[in-house]
Image (cartoon, rainbow, N blue to C red; front, side, top):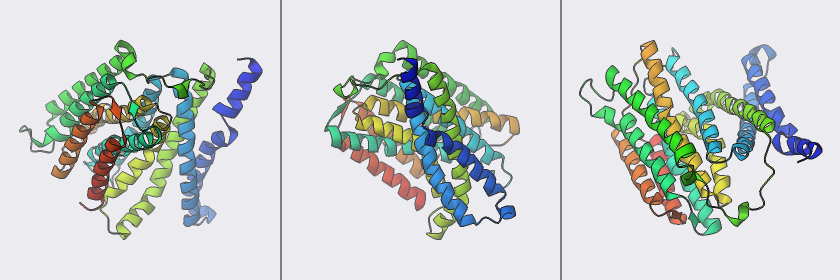
Length: 372
């Protein structure tokens, strides 16, 4: 690629002006919101603008995530997006834990559980349904997907189910020693999975080559990928901050229609996961189901394997207890999700049937979040 061609690719594909302008506009709106009273700006107008910029930030994050992913290749691209979202998720959870008014000990558990259910059933279900409708039947590397689900099932059981049945302290809590042990083994399992995914058995996580991939797009340079990575992180940060800005209004609306307060967390988690969800959906529509599964399972694994240890460390340092064990109905849904997911991955091929089953489970989760 010559310098002129590379420059055109940079400006028109990697960093379109309108995408680059979204994070600064979102930051300006957040500053304006802080000083809205002084500037006599109407709150409804700010909320409408925040909603528009939130959607725009999501689309920008997807674009920059695909830029980075295209440069580093799979499965590294999926890992980059999962880690970026997880870092911001942890920051959000910790800020809520340390808030004097919202220091709820269950916020970590509820957020991680909502993330896992949204990914395993909402994102995966939509990907399988859309991919099945467009391509009738899709194939993927069952060895890699099964390995990811094996680690996910173990981490989910250790962190979200087992605390209800231990005896050292009354559940749904771990004792200090138990929490420290689970933290260490979670990091070991996640680190081992990354090593298997990126080094030892990388081929198990690569897409089966399809004719639709033959044309391809020009691969970004290292500099272009670095710029895309910076804008990815900034765009994701704007998504989080704008979602937080809109949260009180969403909470008031949820209360107004009689839904449970936990439903607000589901809405916020869904907004945070939009970039990953859209990336996975686009891959499934392009008959790259393995990439979709890499993104989905990577998000769920990072949410448990990294978020829980980070939050446990904060708990140790600040002396704040955390509640990890799920309620009984949520345990049933989690076990059902893992069981159905295992069946989905057993044959290495999927149709719309598997997508419909996952979406039904997701519908049950949303219903119980709204009306326990």
